[in-house]
Image (cartoon, rainbow, N blue to C red; front, side, top):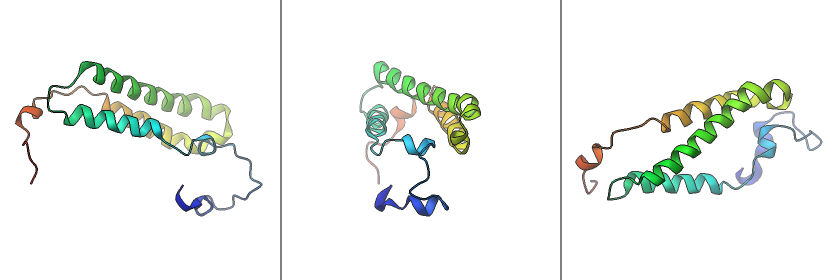
Length: 117
């Protein structure tokens, strides 16, 4: 979190509060998210037809995130009290990952303008 403002988002949390929540185990750097965004840009905006291999990589990542959200929301939160606050985020992750996995017809690519503006 930029400028370490976490305390403002978690009232009552002090330095001695145990680090047992989902946010506490999240890494500060999101290299996988940047890699995924780069692959999505490449898939959507390349000048030729989308690559099946790249589509497969994106699909597998979305399925992994969807399953992870399902496991946290449906299984882990029931046995790990520190994860109960993460259930809405886990369910949202599952839902959003499902949106990206929807197959689309890419006919819009042929009709899109070559230049914006």
